[in-house]
Length: 239
Image (cartoon, rainbow, N blue to C red):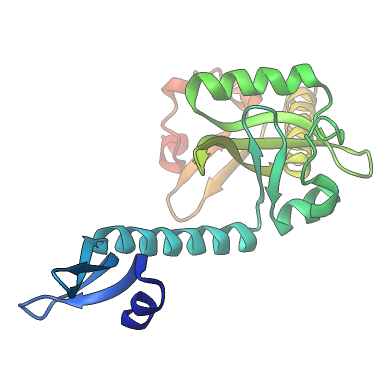
């Protein structure tokens, strides 16, 4: 610091560490200039304690490192886009695996430009809900992947500030296979219920550990028993 001061005659915003009288260390920023008064050379310096700012910056870097690790390692597709125009700023590897586009193909584009959203109107409707509440949870929408296949997705998103710019941080899960399985199960249960109604037969399940029973609707009709009146146990059936 002294060498720099002697060379240029002034130093601006030189960061260093000072030791306090009690032994504690403080980060400081020093600005100084060489002066000559009455034939003598003096150093006029101004010191600013920036310890708290440095601690805040360090905490922010740690937080950013943690976010980056979670962002990259998450098995759920995550995207970051500007709120104002929908331009994609970043996507994680899971997004690439889920929808097929590479990071280079999407960054700087909007999701409607590349065809992820089926229409601009549908995305605008979602953005309106997001804007009103500041977040959405498991918003169901049909997205297209790079191959052109339609996938049923659930989006959970929030509006966050990145460098003072409002952005949309969205986590998207592909629920297509699960929803198809649920629909197939509902259809199978509906066919079973109809078959039992036509054939006038019912069925029940018994949980051996607890003795709890589950009857189908037709079984209640056969025994002319109201669902609310049945105790729901093996002993209730015997009684």
